[in-house]
Length: 143
Image (tube, rainbow, N blue to C red):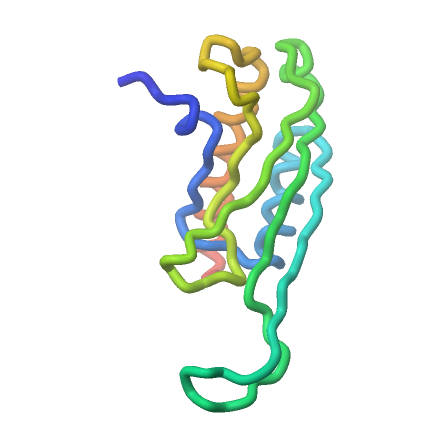
């Protein structure tokens, strides 16, 4: 069955990852992809009354947002992919807003799968595979 553009450009993590785990993932991906990853982590914290429990709370992390770019090399450049911008997404239904659930690569709105350079599809596929490998390594470590 053919994949959709959304399926090709989205990576759903096996389990949500926090800020430190994302840093580890980026180090792993940059090494394995022979690339450079630049990213920004934006944290949103809250403080004040908790209206559900009528208590006062101290500062706590309530949301992280991560955006970045993978700057490629090697086979990806040879196949017309020099960089791949991305943003991480959170599934708020799981109530772990201080973690992210996956990566969405940016794809131009009017693009179809056949419009993507071969290198971009290879990068998406390799990143998915390596992200799964990273999750397995984390599970073996007990994380």
